Length: 486
Image (tube, rainbow, N blue to C red; front, side):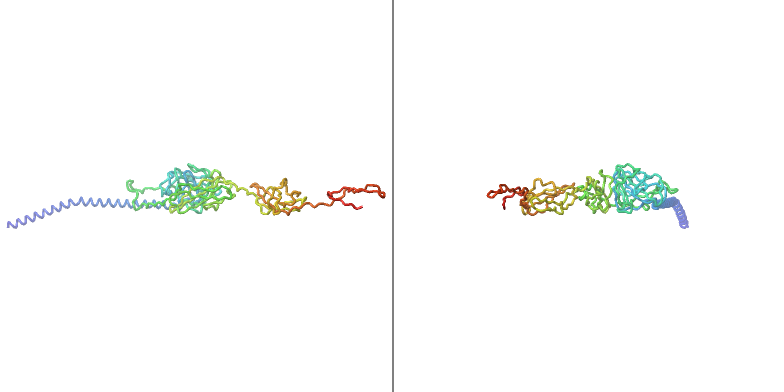
């Protein structure tokens, strides 16, 4: 009996102890369950906010990508191009939409050194930029990005032609455009500009167009979604666009190209490539006519080899060459110094093509005449020198006093010689000379028979046995003997 009661008591005690321990365990589990639920709820809030932020970022990116430019293009062209600090270039483009200008956007290429970018819009006037309609400046952004430049308000009309101009200061401005594109571009002849000029002065004309630049109606803006906290991350790795890989650096000129040769019409100039970084794989050349100061240069049509033969159209200009060096990263360009002013080709001295000729009889007392022959170089005057030669036409000596005319009277001193004439033809380029063939041997003048001028006379008495005498009379021809017949 006692044993049964003891066992019952122990059983009750064990039940009470188990219940107490269960209650205690339950009381410790509730706070842990609440903390786990709180963390789970917070996690869902964070994930919802993150997803919302992703949607907001994607929306903004889409908005920027879908914005339609009023003018220009958002595409990246293949050619790497550059401008020295303070030089401007304009590109002829057609407006794609009508609207009020808000901002310009220029893609900044690798290697850019410009610190400030200036953009502007010009009207089109006779195939070149006209009046400045709008301009603005902004700090240059990093390479591989688009610099946004706020522009003065002006209205663009769809289908109308404008010129989009760019200018970098503080260093070389590097950008992208298209080599031999469908539209022209041109530099302004002014240098060391701090802003775009109100009046454009055409410098060098190129076909590097279009440029990777465009104009929008308003600057792109980003807004935070309602209810978001500024302390939250603005983007997640999944929503950030991957960084664009920079293209290899285009060649950079370190020693300018040089021109060798004489700046004279008809002569040929040669160009060296200069020295470049970036191991160029090919070079292109464009020869240009410039004014005497080396400015206002314009491309010479068809002059795209490393040599250029100067023509009459180059006379009065100086000449320079623009060399473009290309590698896998793009194209760089550099200009030579200008040459001296090109002078006209000197006039060549006359050259004989048909020899002079002597006409007349080779006889003492006769007159010989000389023709000039035929000459190149349009002679303006002729001179003559008559010469006595041997019977072979050699060992010729000038005849004294026989150097003034195209005719010559043969004298006794010429008898036994041959005669030739030397003709000298002169123009602004100098004097050329040519000799005629020799004449036949000069013979003496034939002697004329005596001619009576005073009749002979008879003197004496006409009487048988008387003697009559006769005078010879007077004669020409210097008679050497007389004969009488009574």
